[in-house]
Length: 67
Image 1 (tube, rainbow, N blue to C red):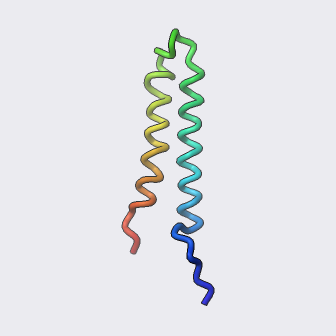
Image 2: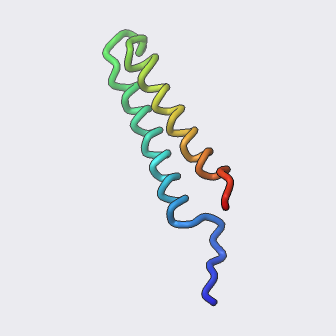
Image 3: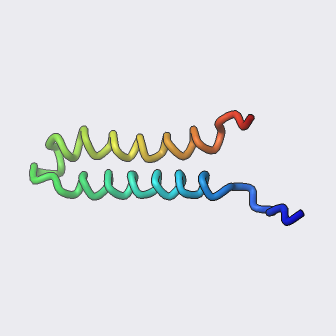
């Protein structure tokens, strides 16, 4: 009878935190680029891909169909 009023479960919160962590890693990777104005591989390709993955993972976890 101890129903929680939390809209998100522990698994959903962990997935959200993982997504935020991946986004932060992506931003950090973008700052590591040694090219001028960040126009190298890390600043233009790898970092933005990681940030995008960090955004997509929590969105899919929140809007997945619950059975």
